[in-house]
Each structure stands twice: as C-alpha cells, then as structure tokens.
Length: 119
Image (cartoon, rainbow, N blue to C red; front, side, top):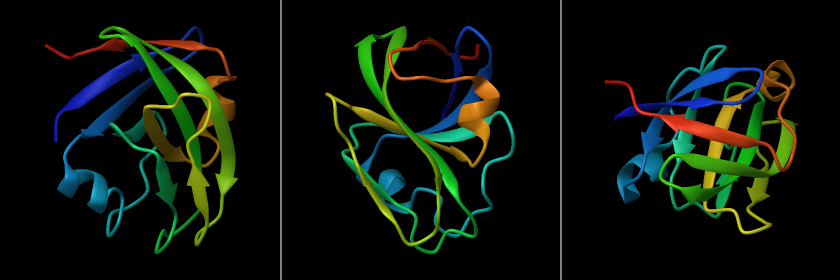
C-alpha cells in the first residue's frame, strides 16, 4: 500500500491508503492498531466496522475538495470493537486512527487537511 501524509493546522498523520476492493476489505483486520501519528485511509468508503479489532479506534469522515485538500465531515471518537459507523455529510473517504488521535490532532468537523505525497 502506498502512503500519504495529511497535514492540519496542529498535527500531521501518515496514512496507508487502501483504495482497492481487497485493501479496503482487509483494512486493519489482523494488524496491530496504528501507532500515534499513523492511520489507514479508506478511499471511496461509506462505512467501517471495528469487528475483530484489538482495541478502540477514532474514525474520521473526509470529503475530497481536490487532489491536495480534504475536509473533515464527521468524527467518531473511541469506537469500541464490534461497532459500525456509517458515512454521512457527503463523506467520500474514511480515516481510521488509534483511539485518542482525534484529540491529539485537535480535529473538528469542517477542518481542512492538506494531502502531501512523500517523494
């Protein structure tokens, strides 16, 4: 999977990008939760589940404004295992993070994140 960085006003997160049927379907299943500052960006995603996860996740809905910028459409903090979250507010992509990362990054609905592709 390729990686991108998402920069906000207060923080940076490096995300692996799951943009195929197989990589989205696998998601974080069978993997350790991402560490601080890391996550999984699910492209073209309308829902996520936390079944079989070893711990809670923070979930961030994103709408693509263009190739270089995304807007936070909704946030769901500390989602425990065995839960579902459905996209809303024109969400196109979903970012899965370790629980507590939304607070660490200071994210709020309406925030904009700049996409930086590592060279």
